[in-house]
Length: 283
Image: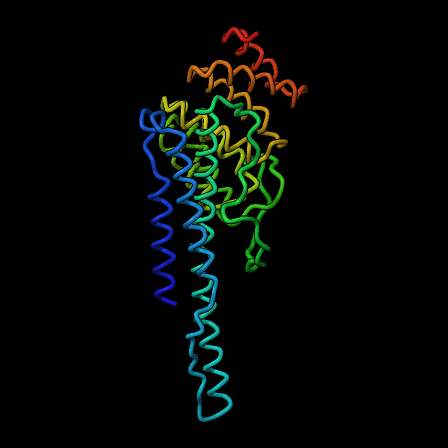
């Protein structure tokens, strides 16, 4: 099991190295072949992870004892050891899947940009490795979100709201770089959180404040993809369109901003989208 844990850690490192890239000019210089090659590498790493779920047939448990009580104690000890190791491996695999899925979403965004496609039509990125039956998690005390966290649907894990509020405080105090880092860390720590879309939206705004418009656009896209009908969706779509305009992707910006009124006609973001379209000269 220790060898298998090391293999999973190595796979996680390989996925991170295969997907990493610099922001800015390095990304815009990528060709379609480069992006497709990265997707192929990701697929190979996922297959390696799947093989970790196959037994080697070499396990040998020592359950001997001089009495029934000794054997029961040995069984309990082995059960605790195997449970701890399986939970460690599950957490590592989940982290790889979550990170890989986010990176595939970035690759899809870049691929559509390079091909001149419509980024507003991008759907939610499919889970890396495919959807699998959910494993029942251990029971963990959870709390309802307070008024400070908003009215996000679902429950929050212990510490989840506090971490979100810490990121918000950093952003509101003007420390945009730290806020962007805290929001990114929040979604890594709490994948699937009811506050995920809001965290990505605020991460994008924090990145915008630091001048990193390209990464901000990706954060807005991630926010919209996380919940295409949620309360943050209109603002995320508007911010994505505005960011595309600042990146001189005028045609894509106009299409994206036009979708705000089509999808969310009653939202306050519609007026802002129209103003932005007038500024860009959208027809």
